[in-house]
Structure formats: structure tokens, C-alpha cells
Length: 214
Image 1: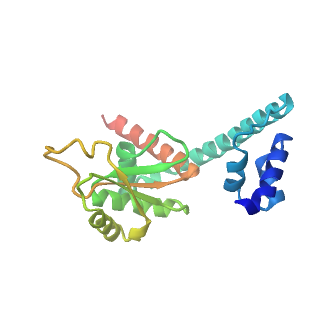
Image 2: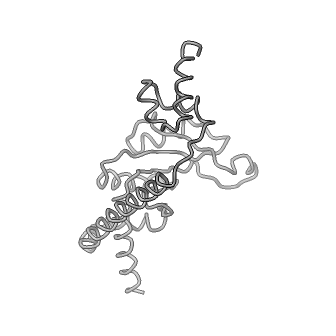
Image 3: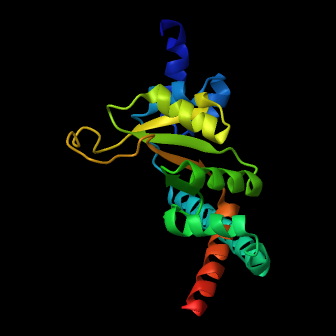
């Protein structure tokens, strides 16, 4: 680190003068992680004008994405009935209605231990989104991780190297358990705000149809 000593001193000096980390990185031609490590203990005191500008920028961004979500929802709602005539698509929407993660407006995520259901989820996520799909397995401590990866990779036709692992929180507390997911629980996730809004429209339409029947 000695060879970077003079650069570190410059970074500290500029930070004390109130310079943003991005500008420091650009001036020194260094990565953000390196510069951040040097200056992390020197906070910038923002002026009232800067604070108000930041708040305005945040509100502007919030309005922008709210408009994007609203437009996506409206678009999906218009042809929801026609789309739901497709049995496979209807099954996917029902799956999301029962198993999908709905606590965020920016992510589409389904978790289940049933390979057939996860094939359905992956099929439609690939059709509906151009963004990268991420895979993670929740497992118990006594399970064979290579076996789990092979099972899901082969079953879904994906690269086993792209599957992450997440140890179940109760993994070491179920020594006498009589049931568990033989191949773990797979989560498929894609960060797609537009698709999440569309799925909401399709779920709302499906629920309306179900309510009319009952």
C-alpha cells in the first residue's frame, strides 16, 4: 500500500474539502472500493441546498418509476382476460398468486420444492422478461450440495455453476424431523419492475374471476 500513499493523502484531502467519492475516483483513476476504504471515516457535511436538491432528485425518481409501474399495470390489465385463456399462463399466474414473493415492487420471485412447478415458473419468466434469472437452493446441513445442484440443473436445463446456496435457518434443529424437501427448496428470481407490475395486474384479474365464481 506504500506506493499508493500519496494517492491516499490526496483522497483524504479532497474528501475533507467535501468532494464526492465518484469525483475522487475519477481524478485518481482508482476503483470505488479502494477509495471508499481510505475515506469512509470522513463524512461530508451537506449544505441545506445540497440536501434539498437530493430530496428533489429522489422524489423525481420515485415519480418516474411510479409512472413506469402504472403504465405496465394498465398495459397488462387490458389483455389480461385473453392471456388467462392460455392454461399454462393461467397456471403460472396462480402459482405466483400462491407462492410468489410480493413484498417488493421491483422483483419477481418464486420458491418451491416441486420441480414441475419450478419448470413452469422458469418457462414464463424467460418468456416475459429479458433480464437475467437467478437461482438459489435452500438446503439442510446434512444434504449433498452437488446432488442438489445436479438435480435442479438437469431438471431446468440450466448451468449448475449459476446456482447459489442458502442454508435453511432451521437446518441444525431438525434432527428428528420426519419430513423435509428431498432436493431442497429452489428460488428463482429476476429483478424486473415492469414484469412485477404486469403480474400484479394478471393476479388481480384472476382473483376477480375466482371471486365471481364463488
